[in-house]
Length: 192
Length: 171
Image 1 (cartoon, rainbow over the protein chains, first blue to last red):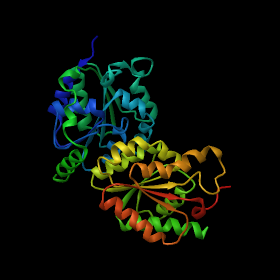
Image 2 (cartoon, helix red, strand yellow):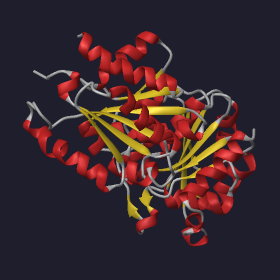
Image 3 (cartoon, helix red, strand yellow):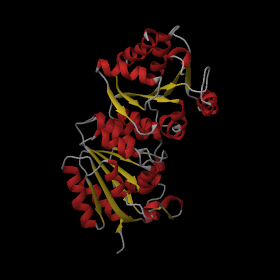
């Protein structure tokens, strides 16, 4: 079965988001969200692969009054998989970690990641102690799963199996400079 | 251990004075002296890490949440964190105090610590990061104050390298 269309899945995420604080990993993940689900309360990483998990955890600990959503990629999770154990240790009930899993390094030409082989991301997260894991294979699964994650106490680890079409979004996020991204986010997050 | 406790107490007192709430920590011999005092006093949230690089992200996230954090890690951990410091700490202007247990300096006992330990000040300085080498208790309070002031007012990473001479020789 072909995996769900990432553009459509990102549009569903945009429909469901309300006042959450969002952290996006790497230029590729960030470009999809920038193009299809941009809000002032979105923070975009332009590098620092693997750090979204930790930035999201820091934000969730600092803002227990808000739900925090991480949009991550499979390659980035694999790069910093130990960070899942840190999330589990601190158990932020306001954190939702979404992994757009295309089992590849889309930004560099679609080379397979280990998620294309024997590694199962949900099992990895569960082994780290994040037992609240779910997998979405279809757009309906994703809509239901993401809605629950935004509503019920976390931390949540939601693997969305997707196929990309990066030509629609490539490079979109690089139009904003890092300090401008931070300032916009801080202004929007403080305003609430 | 009064001598060691007194230097670590200065860091803890200055953290409190600057409103630092989160100490993001991977155990090492030097940083542990700070964290023990902080835990005893109970006014900090200690965030234990699995890898030091995570702490760069955590401090950034705490800053995005309007709160202040510091990173307390050994020398090797800064080696593990260079791209995070360079691509997140510097360009996003993250106030990132890094209290680093200095390895590879005077009195090192492990030959695998010397290469990175001796290169680290040059690596940090070549990235434009204010690097404060702390080898004695002289003027310590003003140096810690000044480093934290730079980190929080200029919104930038600042490195404190705390040596064995001050923290006690490793045997």
